[in-house]
Amino acid sequence: MTTLLNVLSVLGGLAMFLYGMALMSEGLQKSAGDRLRAFMATMTSNAFKRVLTGTVVTALVQSSSATTIMVVSFVNAGLLTLGNAIGVIMGANIGTTLTAWITSLGFSVNIALFAVPMMGFGFVMYSSKKASMKNIGQFLMGFAIMYVGLTFMKDCANAVLGEYQTGMMDFFGSINGFGFGSVLLFLIAGAILTIVLQASSATMAITMLLAASGLIDFKLAVAMVLGENIGTTITANIAASVANTSAKRAARAHTIFNIVGVIWVLAVFRPIISLICVIMESLGFYDPMEASHQLAYIAQSNVEADAAMMETYKNSLLYGIAMLHTLFNITNTCVLIWFVPLIEKAVVWLVKEPKGETEVFRLKYIAGGPLSTAELSIAEAQQEIIHFAEICRNGFGYVRQAVNEQNPDKFDTLNEKLIKYEEITDRIEFEIATYLNEVSKNEISEEAADEIKAMYKIIGEMESLGDSGEAIGRILKRKNAHNKVFDKTILDRLNKMMDLVQKSYDVMVDNLRNKKYLTDISNAENCEYNINECRNHLREEHIVNIESNSYNYLTGVYYMDVLSELEKIGDFMINISQAARQKNEY
Image (cartoon, rainbow, N blue to C red; front, side, top):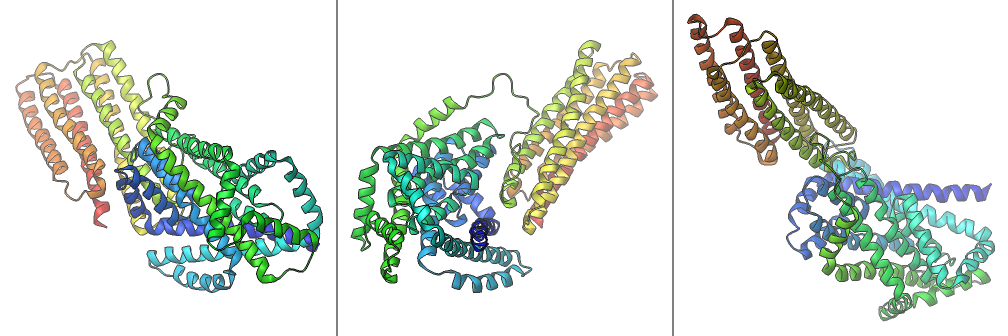
């Protein structure tokens, strides 16, 4: 019963470790979400800055997976080019090495003593109404939970090992007897474990636990670390599986980068192990290989060992693992950074553009669902809204053609397109709103909540643009059914109005593209004023023309109905620009 409780406690400790890591990462991302976005978007002008960006962001959020998913989403949203993304991903691999050092420190220092008071401070800060304090409190609580979980894992695992030590030593000893085959087995085990846990940091903690217990030697621990570098690429590939082609290529680049790195390390495996041992000895530690053998001997023979010596052996081994992880990722980046164009060509060849014409009205940027942190999902939603605006503008092109088309058969084809575009706007509005709902379910900052509120308003008005396009199609269809025709004079007047509406569409799209800095919408207000003035002038002309019998009364009714819908389109577009500006006024 005691053994079962200890095993469950190990699993519970692992769960606490993973939850604490996620909580810590999320708190930091929420605290600095916008700044991280801006930092990542601007610090990519050269190879060094790209690598530095990935390193800094990952070191801050303590998750290479979070950084890589951010990169994939930014590529998906068109905020990063593929070449820039590859450099950032390389930097993310360096940034994640900090986690290995933090984890090794958790094994050598009883941080749990400080973690519990830290959790108290974190809870007080988390209870604050101020968003920034709340996010920092979440980070502190996550940090504390992570180390409490790590302590539980370590203590309960030692209790289990104490009871079944001989059997486990025999089991791992038999696996260790395959020579280089053992290295490959543990590499695969590290990759699978990382895929299952979806956290390379958890695999690192388990690797260090096995090594510190004397169950595996230094070279097998190194093999697990290499496997973890392959397994961690799966997260980005999952995120990119439903994204666009560029995002898929960025995820594949991450996989190629890590696999190539693992291959060259395996090719020089023994010299690499020897190099790490030399480095650690030069720093005043024991040879990690020798330290692992001493720990295994003590565990097997059940001899009493000096506690200080045991601690020295463990520290030498654990810091050796962290050193290998760091040197591997730094060296791999320094080597492969020169081959980014080649990696880019390779992923372009591996991930082909879809054949045939891409359907213009499908979602492009948020098909994969929201990111793990709500703050970082908004950029994708904004890009999707710009795409939605462009679709609405394209739909208006068919309105112009339908108004000017005199051939009934050709008109019917155009009217079907207007009906289809109305359905498209309905569907896109629903899918973006669903996405925003998912984002809103997470804890979000007040600024993010205001931005989402503005987005709801914008997509609602865009859906109305599709409705007006279909309404104009219905008016024209009734006109044709009654055998009425717009003469050249009426068409000239409508085309004048549609020129103004087209200008308004262009301004709307530009304002949405510059939404982040939008404070002056005089361009949209001028368009709205001109549309209203044109509508008023054409109405007055219409009354005069009806009185002088310039055209049939029923023809005039259809003419005025189309004019009214065009003016409504102008109203919807000024509402969109106002909603976009309003976000910057909160």
